Length: 259
Ligand SMILES: C[S@@+](CC[C@H](N)C(=O)[O-])C[C@H]1O[C@@H](n2cnc3c(N)ncnc32)[C@H](O)[C@@H]1O
Image 1: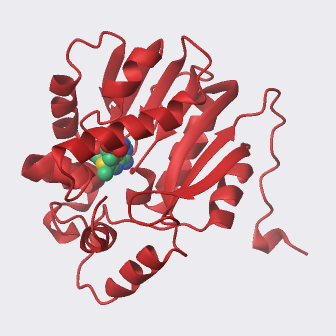
Image 2: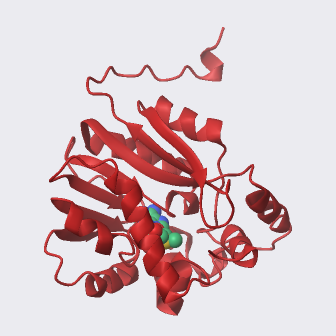
């Protein structure tokens, strides 16, 4: 949907977001995304998309989640933005919770989702993750176009929390940019010499990395597909289930412990 130019912009730094130097370090994601939302929230979410394309993509991503619903589900979205997906998913679920680090994005989501009584929006801090939600609260947790903007450790913390808040047998549905795709490889190379990098710039992943990260956290990957609007292998879409009976995964031994 978006041009390669916009992929490049997304990868090397969000055009609307300030350079890291402009935001005090402790403000991190929140400052960058509030600023991006004030400048142009829709463009910060899907750069260059027309209003029609924005809505079509929301329907498409709602459909990716719908496939994993059982009926009356409690669902959580990590990083909802303006509620691009919520508008189409809310009528299909029992309750739909959505968190975002940006109060500015959430203010726009509140307007967009007015009248959808089963939607609950919550602002989170830079270092809060899903702490405010109890264990095993949700049937499905999903996230699109968010984990890619986080430091990989922070993305893994969200995934670890997603595992915690899912009921046994619940499903995580997510998307990661494919580092090995021609589009993101080219974009990565274009960004090498950038003087300053936005804290919200895109981080790419490989399929083994996605599988390994999820499996290390205890998930069983049920489905992994390539797709997306930037190119047919540009995005990795994954659905991973929390096993019905959880056996605590032994933490990997550190290199120092290896005999
Ligand atoms: C590209 S937008 C995608 C929005 C939405 N997921 C969608 O697909 O339309 C990225 C969103 O992630 C949010 N975000 C960034 N860092 C976050 C964090 N650490 N915790 C929660 N949300 C975050 C931003 O505020 C922004 O709304």
